[in-house]
Image 1: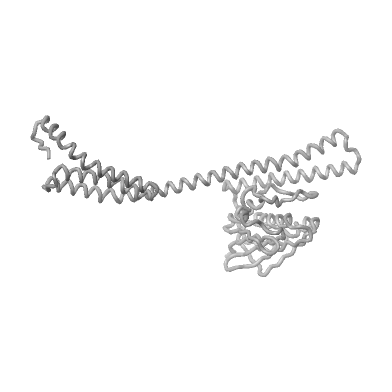
Image 2: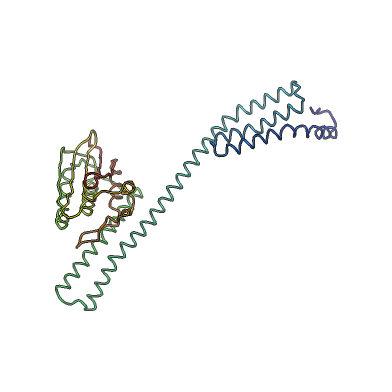
Length: 349
């Protein structure tokens, strides 16, 4: 060991003398530690940090023991105790820090994945909306020019063009309404005025409003209420949930098919089920039916007939947002000749 009473030159000479010995002991320990880190590079972050803490401490201990010739004295014992204390203090801290960093890394990775998914969804939505808005706008423009240029002059044809322009305008209005509603949901700006609502009344009013659409397509609407559930919710939003599901079922049900609406209670939840006859949804697409602008690879949305509104693929996404705003849950699965959309809402206490 270096004696503080020695001259500085002697201390330097002594240090240079023991340096090769210290390196001979510390370098192999460090090399082993680096190898261990390399082998554990794909392991848990807490384990890597633990090894990283132990490498310098082990190198110092082995180096000091080698220089001292493994001759224990008071100074050496004190140094070893200090090293042991450093390990006792830093090792738990390293493990805790590793877990915190690992958790943060996982959270950041999931956040990046969610952001990429949201960005992809936004791009897909813009593409769908651009296409869907362009179609009725082009039709309106062409028919308006025909009327303005006098190409269409017969009263019957003029009335037909005016009726078609009205239908396309209603489609555009519906798309804008859907976009506005979806933006409120995604921005968290949806405010519900809650009250006790009888779901049977909501279903009855909705079916009455959708009956003309179903008749034009020769689709039969049936309803079955096993019980009379009352939920705590907002009447307009609940009506939109039912309307979106029923209109979606009518749209995807072929002529002479049936759309069945069932109402009941399961435990503390009101259950609303809407069955269609669409032929089923591919299993790989069931998990995406509530995504914004998703319509499926089979292009299940048909071309518009008459004034039948065809949305921009936002109806089910809006429905899911409204259901969740009521602290409910919505699912979709294949059932019978088509698929079933099932909504569960908490009963009013």
